[in-house]
Image 1 (cartoon, rainbow, N blue to C red):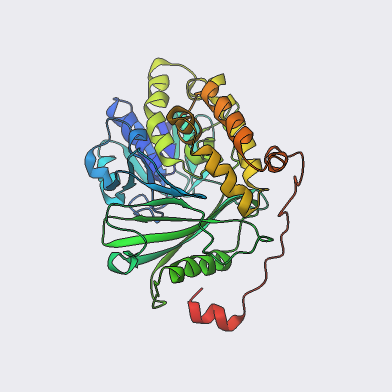
Image 2: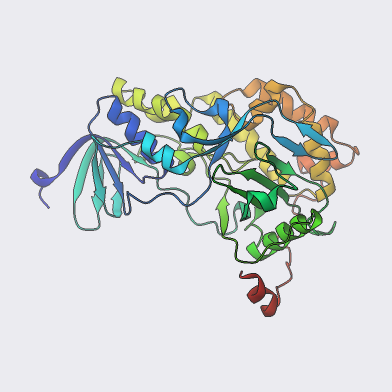
Length: 398
């Protein structure tokens, strides 16, 4: 294709998940000429997205929220009520809020994504002053992972564990059937605002992740402990992705953004709210002719990412008992300290303090050596999860 046939834009966004769509939408609203590329631009995203309400940008309308949880719960060795509203996002509402009516949308797969040029599989070529690559995460391999298996349960059936405005963000109660010599996992359970509750057993930090069949079995054990029996026909969702995707070093090529660009939280697996809060920073940098990578990733933010990675390494080597003790210490920290770890993009001073305090208050004392990696650095590496019998897999619909 000749250069005369190349389409010209201010910004090209490759990948229209929530992050890419938000970036394209805000760039369009800022008056920039935007190209948006995705093989299925009209598809509604499969995963469930949640976040703290105060993480969302002011420009996002209320219709993007499906349900609010005023005071979510964390269970460690005791119950902790977190005085910070949490929400489940509405996928249809979020998509509608991120309209692309004035952008040029290309339904196709990008075969080449460069600093100023995108080539589609059919030969279509797009040129842009800035190209953002928001296509999500590369394959997991043996990287440190977030693994989760979620089962969608009718709210009436789920009521013994989770009520209409309740949510279990981390449930470490010993109800999942895992033994002390097995890698730990916790339960995440929230209502979705559509008459269902998702129960999702989650593992963080293991190299290569935890098998779905193990997580499903642990979820079913937790439900059974509360008298909840399922039919086996309930829909489910699976998550299995790396937590250690780094920020871009510079703007030499296409600029990675969202989970692909270091905005996947290494300690929690959340990314959408952080990316939504940063799209205007990226767009303003483009409008001003500044380097978006420098604007998004000042040294303070890079230091925060580095410290969170230390937390990820710690998570991946703890036992269940140690995880409970560590989270018990963390959730007795100050509100600012908790936000510095869970949310703040660049509050490096508060994050350093809360990490030190969490280690200092984890008990017994010798467990702190595991947390910082002086002992048992490679615990759980290549853990031999037992295979599930074929009859069991068939009966549970795995």
